[in-house]
Length: 612
Image (tube, rainbow, N blue to C red):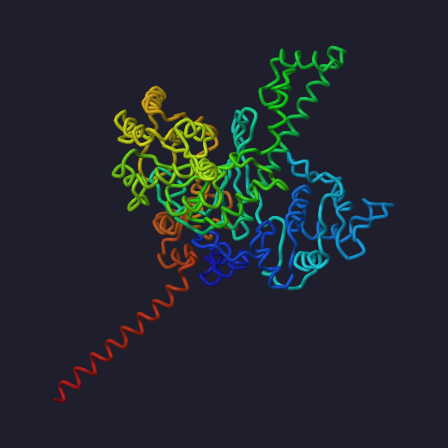
């Protein structure tokens, strides 16, 4: 009995074992809002321009683009190191003996010296060759470099609210499917929230699916992200950082694949004693131990060119977490950065923005950036069916959505027709539809929305417009409703019916099913684990033990035969500490005071009544 600790001793031991109990308990809470950005992402052009304006620094046209170009080709190193090299602190070793030092006579950075900065570092691969031309770049003003040094230097004693960094997020985890075609990337933001990106490797191209929000407010019944609710928007810098992380992962996987092939070639050189690469490629193809992921390139020129394209992200789709058009300003800035020739240099028709249907913003996108693709997540052929699976569809008629989508597809054609003074005909509409600037996404669910009658209704919506319809096989997610995907034969029949009305209908290829490829699924699963209450005994004392909630711990009290028979001693032993303890004490005290006041007032009332 003496060895059994008292309640006070038990609590003291728990507090000593866990220095910061609040940290442990707060980890189980799910944050519903986003914290202010601190430090700030340098890739967010709006935030950077506002900071420069507050300092009274004005840049000429092209100077900020030059800075982003250099940062991009450097591989996004730590900002203070990169700025130090721009200011000449690290460029002396790389420009040894050059008459043009890193700073010119007027205090600006000369372009001829900038071109060789970070030449030994691993850059982000880019298909843009314009930035390598010597003597064609403008100069960065010294005031701008001093500002960057001031807000990025580690020795700066000011708080993080004024600091900028190259990357504010980090890759929490990434997982590749068994066939090597899909990589799911969980990106942890600086405030602890997690968003997902999906890197897909198609034949001859790589596509990245990015997120624009933390969670989603649309609440689609078939989407796991919709069950999270909305937590906040991503700034344009955080959207572009997903592209940076995915590019590094893609480049690394491409290099690993190359090294595996080289190891296969070296083994064959020893086996055959023959160094003709064409001969070695044939022998590698014949070997059974060479998997598809490590198979070398063939002698076909087309296949060699396609494999060269696989080390670059050439397509970006806003089909991850969130509704992009509810974060319109940041998505628009990110899209413009992606198609900028100085950095990512993506083709205009290689960037696709997907929306559930925010009509006003769809028209804004058509006005501001008609070159990018627009995809409408329709998912139902009529208004009644759509409102059942897409709650946000109430008040937004399907007819207005289709008209806004059609206007986006024909925007550039209309501009040319207005400039020439001649209207466009059916042939020009068909040409515009082949460019796939407008697309309807339609998830295939077992039920009313995937019947043959629904296929006819969907085809009539697209009739005469030559829209592209993309049927998406449903990926099972942990949502409230139990949903499933129709058979492949039924989807093929559905596709043929829609195509008979003149629409170009395809079935999307399912990728990454073995790694929970549905958007938002990984975050939801993590939140379910974190929402479980953690018993303090599962922390320092029972690491390998199964976690118990306070209710299960209470249910086991008094049932263990090894415990003391005394109920009071058992309660002392099994006392647990929860985050609600301080509030329970306060509530108990307040209840006691209220009850005392009530009894006293009742007694005074009775005495006063008797005196009368």
